[in-house]
Image 1 (cartoon, helix red, strand yellow):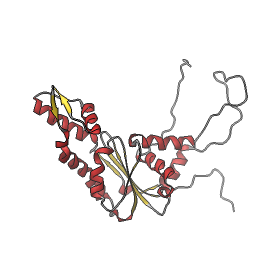
Image 2 (cartoon, helix red, strand yellow):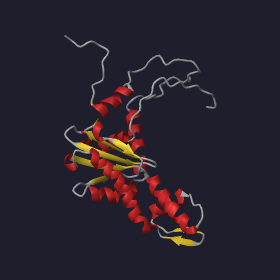
Image 3 (cartoon, helix red, strand yellow):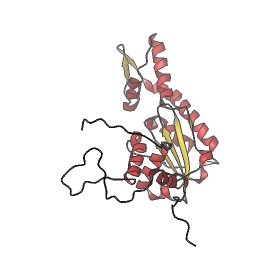
Image 4 (cartoon, one colour):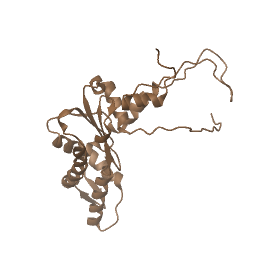
Length: 238
């Protein structure tokens, strides 16, 4: 502890955030990971609304995308409108978010502001995001699982239910952390370092001599995302 360390990142793999939520949900419901079923995972972020369409764990790229219709669009609209009414610059988006999540009145300058009046505006922005989603789909009929995650999911739930009236919408506990939990589980399968029986700790520069083979994380994610078999180093048997 306290020692400076230099870390060099030689390779990086870009993975869409909703992939973490997909993997998390597949752990809770194995049918999500089955290639027999098609899933739609929608992730409501601060700035963007991201979605993945998958068959099992395999991503369907031409149906997956992202648009700038995140929760901050809603919060900024409300803050701008409230600020205009007060005739001052109001930018406290966190205060607006807290009031919306709790269902309480937003009280500013000793005046109550009922945010329920913004329901129509909220639904309009959510519908704009869903318009993009539906335009990408070949129709929602084949979707077996519709999963809604992300910190702003609570503002989009009603719109999602309205636009997919014949489907059950899967909402997870603490949707803000669904992506993180999925990638954490995936990472735990990648490599682990457990203490052995040696009483002495490793000194700087020392090497662990006895190890067990670990899965290459890039190949593991590719298997889940694109249903590719991991490339082996050995030539195929004849």
